[in-house]
Amino acid sequence: MTTGIWAARVRHMLWRGLCTLAGGVRIGGHVPPGPKVLVANHTSHADTAALLAALPPSCRPRFVAAQDYWFDRAWRRAVVTTLVGALPVARAGSGYEALRDAARPVLGDGGSVVIYPEGTRGAPGTPVGEFRSGALRLAADLDVPLVPVGISGTGRVLPKHGRLRPEGVVLRFGDPLPAAQCRDTSPEVVRSAVQALRDDSEAVPWRDSRTFTWLERRSDAQLMGAGFLWGAAEALSWPIMAEVYVVAVGAAQPGRAGRVATSVAAGSVVGVVGHALLARRGVHLPAPLTRPRMHRQARADLRRSGPAGIWRQMFNGVPVKVYASAAGELGTPLVPFALHTAGARPTRMAMAATVVLLAGRWAHPLMRRRYPEFLILGSAVFAEGLHQVIRRWR
Image (cartoon, rainbow, N blue to C red; front, top):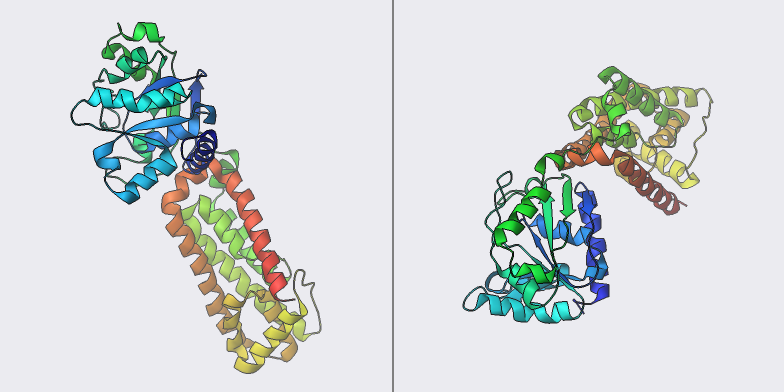
């Protein structure tokens, strides 16, 4: 169940998606059809993820893995078998015979075997290490071509003993070496081919998206001015919550998230107070995407708690403009209401900015390249969340 074409398709989609989120994979060269042995340089556990993302499912790749390490515990065995398609091979004793016996049924069934001939992970930025001869012997004995693969950038994505960082990865597939030539080819020739295919200088960084570049060039005054207007507009009538601006801008510019959140909060406070004043004078502004129950809840909170009722808006999903309108209609004391609003709104914006700052430590390099996709996905998530809130308050 973990070795067929459907398992290969699921793994490919899983790792292609994850690698895209982590920075993306660029692929060069051509992967020949049919059974084959692939050999690649090895600097990171992310090498396997990148290969699974790059190889078409029809290859049905199986990755040679040390049986004494990856298969010594049940949970580890389950992970590498299910998510990677690892092929257990004993390192002790007759190592090559164990490799050949494990690979024979895979290649005989039209699949592919992936080997890291260095035997261990090397350091990023250093030359590819010495290759062992097992992959060449295997290709010759089982009559399949050997395909060199150069992997660049994975050492930065997931360094040895380091933490995951979003960066781009490049894979290049070289010309296949026919089985008939493998027996007379030295491991050094294959190592040199892999070294030539690997080029860390092209791995990262990807080009920044135009949307990200445009936003990065905006001055603090421009971003904060727009934030102030957004916060005020949402408090008056605009249906898109003010936190959306904080998240949208802060995700791409985490260093400016605090200043942006402050400007949005200031605009929101001004807008709430202005809305309450208008409502006192009988001016009722449009309140799109709100429900009668929301208005009843806001009036009930302000009757029960007075000006402090605005704090209940923080988590109940009722737009702040509804509380502003209710405060004006009920004649809630304006100064205390303004003071409580000046506490509640910045608190909400600070919470949004904190989330952005924490996530931004990891996601900022990804945002540089994938900012438009983030905006599209974020818009879809927000639209669904808004739909659920409106349904709740029907």
